[in-house]
Image (cartoon, rainbow, N blue to C red; front, side):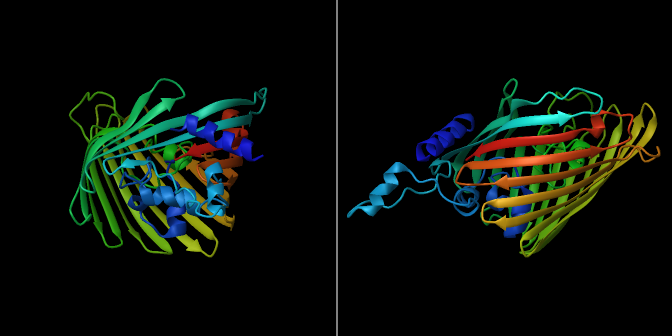
Length: 373
C-alpha cells in the first residue's frame, strides 16, 4: 500500500510539474489572496506560505518518504521538509493538474461517461530582485495546444503596500473561483480562460486591498479598436469576515459592456460562507440592450482535517427582459486531501432551466484527482 501511495504521488507530479484559487480557504484562514498566491489578486502559483499551508496544514496526514525512516535510528536525520517549489532565492516553480471521470446525463440523449484530462498548468516565478521585482509565467499545457494564461512583470514597493503589474494577467473582478462553469464566472466572461493584456496597480493598506487594471478588452487577442477595458476591485478583509465590490467597463467596436458585483465571505465555526451577486448590462447587441444577473451562495464545511463538504446554489437570469428563462444549479462536492500535493473530489451537479433546453437540464456526476505543488 505504501508503494502504491508513493507511485500515485509521483504520477500526479508528472502531470503537474500551485493550485487554482480556492476563495473559501482565504475565508477559513482570514488571509488575503496575496498571502497564498504570487499574483496579488489570486490564482496560479502559490507563495511559499501558500505551499506550506497546502502541504502541511490542509491534508489529513503526511505521505512519508522512505528516507524518513532514518529519523528512528540513532544519529538519523530529521524528516525531509515541505516542497514549496522554491529552487533558490531567485527562481521557483509550481504546477497544477486535474484528471476527471465525468458522467453527464442529458434528457433525451445517451449518456457517455468517460475520462478526460481536465486541465494542467505550469508556473514559473523569476525573482530578479527578491521581494521587489519579478517576472511571472502561467502556462496552460493540456488539454489541447499549449497557451499562455499569464505573463507579467511585477514590481512591489519596499513596504509591500503597493504594486505595479504589466503584461498579460487575469483581470481583478469578483471571487476567483476554481470552477469556470460557475454562473458568476461564465456570465461576466472573466475567468481562467480570459486573461488580457494591460497594466494593473494595487494598494494593500491594512485590511484593505484595491486593484485597478486598464487592458485591451480583447481577452488577449490582438487589439482591433481604440476602446479599453477598465477593471476595479476593492475589498476589506478581517479574520472572520470580508466584503468587497468590483466594476468592469469594456468599450469596443461591438457591444459595450458594464458589470458590477458585490461579494462577501464569512466564517462561522467550521463553515466558510461565500456569496456574490453580479449585474451585467450590454449595449448595442443585435437585439438591443441586454441585462443579466448572476448569483452564487456557497457553504464549505470542514467536516474534519483534510475533508471539505462544498454545498453551492447558483442562479442566472440570462435576459431580464424575457420571462421564465432563468437557470439554477445545485452542487454537492466532497473534497479530500489525504496527504501533500493530492486532492480527490467527488461531486454532483443538478442543472435546472426551461424544459425545452436539454443541455441546461443535465445532471452531472464527476470524480477528480487534483495533483498540485
